[in-house]
Length: 153
Image 1: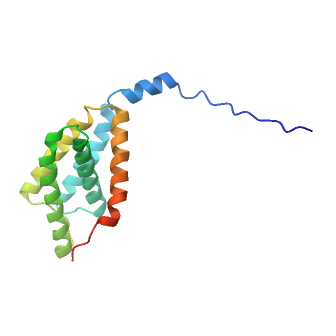
Image 2: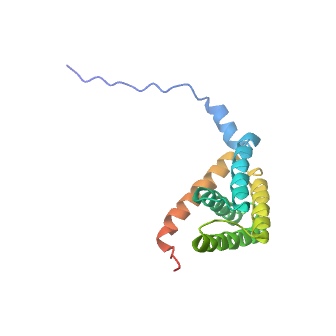
Image 3: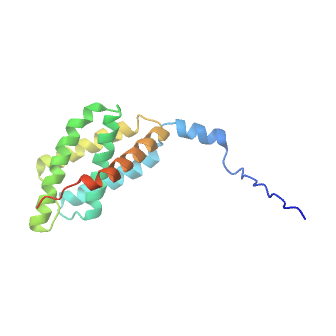
């Protein structure tokens, strides 16, 4: 008896034309609003001195993504705001080491607010597929640089 091949029948649940159009379109406002709400919530917790490591990660992810977008040519004017926000996050980290609480000073709060505004403009000006490509590039860049990070003591 011969072996019989069982051919895969691909599901037609995804319309390839609609999928391509969605990837080429600008990221929808509802998705960006969810992301923005999470970032503003993290900033609010930092402002009130109740920040946690999850909030820290949310803000550093925002910083890294905005910086990568700027390096890829999307809103290069954000690099100055990224540097100020990075300095504020470093100060907040040092404060956490001494007091056990995350928080920002006045210029740090303003730097993070500016960064969130720039990030919103960056993310709403590119297609969803480009946005996802930059997210993946940022993730890969961070993973490859983990062995180069030196912990200051």
